[in-house]
Length: 337
Image: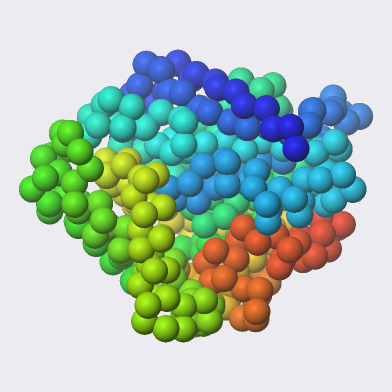
């Protein structure tokens, strides 16, 4: 697929913290072209939002793009305008490791959503979205999109997320990830020359946080295989992550609490979670408690089976795309507002 890459710079972006950047760089990938409906507004744009530590590149890979964006598929790139941004602090968008380190403004999910809206409306000329969908952190931002810009999008599909404040085990692991970096003397207040050892401790916690016990037992059924499995994942994460960036990425969830504003979501919403998701375990009951407040919302809980991969099921579109297809069949483009 021929994904185009681009960059838009927002001038004088002010964060909720009161801090500002003279230039906030947002990198994005796109597929297809925008089309306008009878009302003159864009009617085929789809915004897909990635998870913590990730980037829009996640959705260009096999397992996601090959299941959704190909010819004749659900979000065919020849009929839809697919937009895959790198969130603030992630990918090739502005982030602490670009040079500001711990002097980078503190950002939250609300800031990230506002920046996405400016990228669309000012940078790409998109005045309306057909669909916002996201995975993990991107799923949480999808809930916020429905509250912050309720007339801008026709429907919402958050995956692997909960519409509730980050608390309990989820918050504890996030704090342990941050603390494991900042408590390492080699971190030096963010002014390190080489990645501090605390980054590996943070990666250990990230691996536990997103683990998939049943499938990992099948993939690594012996001690030697388990050790090799772990080493491979640590190596992959260590080669891609920066300690300061990681601190900011996990701290960004501290302003997240869509629960008080769920009744503001007026467009159709389909939430998809997995029964083996260790980040958002279904036994908490948080999704079931929240959904009655979403006027046109419903949810699917994917069962544990040979295809599920815990929290990571969100990028295996073959597992859940039939649910998304049935949902989208009920939504007429251009109907929001």
